[in-house]
Image (cartoon, rainbow, N blue to C red; front, side):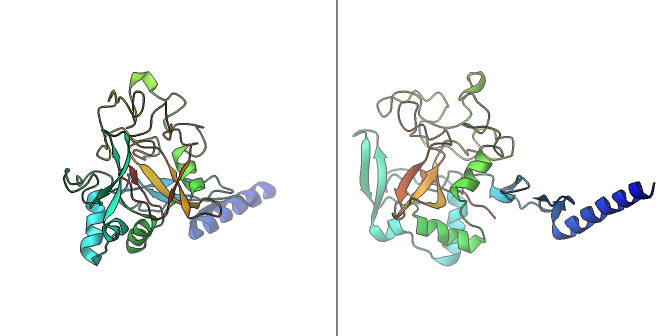
Length: 268
C-alpha cells in the first residue's frame, strides 16, 4: 500500500511540475508541449511528438492581401517588386513566365488586371518582404521540417494532408491544375486560378490550403545558394507537371522573387 501511495504521489508531482512549466512530463523524462490556454484567432495548435518535434502555433490560412495591407498601412513598407518595378507572372497566352511591369502584391497580374482580392492569399512578395511582415506581427516562417510536420498531420500521411487518395470520393480537396499543363485546365476544383482562403474544407488539424492554391515560403535555404525552399504547390501544379500538392515535393526560388502563385503562412 505504501508503494502504491508513493507512486501516485510521484506521478501527481510530475503532472503538477509539468503543468507549471507548460508541459506534460512523465517521470521517465518524455516531454510534450501543451497547447496554449488561448490559441490566437486565426491560428491552430500543431502538437509535437513529445521528443524531437516540439509543438507550435501555425496560421490556419495563407496570409491574405487584407492582412498584408494592414502591415503596409501601419509601416509604409515598400516591397521588392515595387522597388524593382516588375515581377513574375505566368502568362496563359504565351504559356510561360513573363516579367510584368508594375506587377505587385496589389496587382499580382499587373496594373491592367484586377486588383488582388482581400481574401486571396497575398502574392508577389520576396523573402525579405515576408520576413518584414513576420517581424511586425511577431511570428516567423516555418522551416521545411516544421511545414511538413504540420501538413502531414504529425507524420500520419506521407503525401496529402487529408489521407492517401489525391481526390477522395471524387471531390477535389484543394486548388490545383486539372489537365495537361500548361495547355488546358479543366477547372474540376471550381477555380481557374487563385482561390480565396477557406474555399476548401480544412485538414483534420484545422489548416486550410496547406496543399495547393499558392506555394508557401519556408525558412529553409537550398545549400550554398540564395534560393529558399517553397512547399505545397499551387493552382499551376498538375499531375503532368510539378505535383507540388504532394507535400514531399519541394521547389526552390531566389530570395528576391515575387511570383503570382507564391505566398506564405507563419508560425509562433
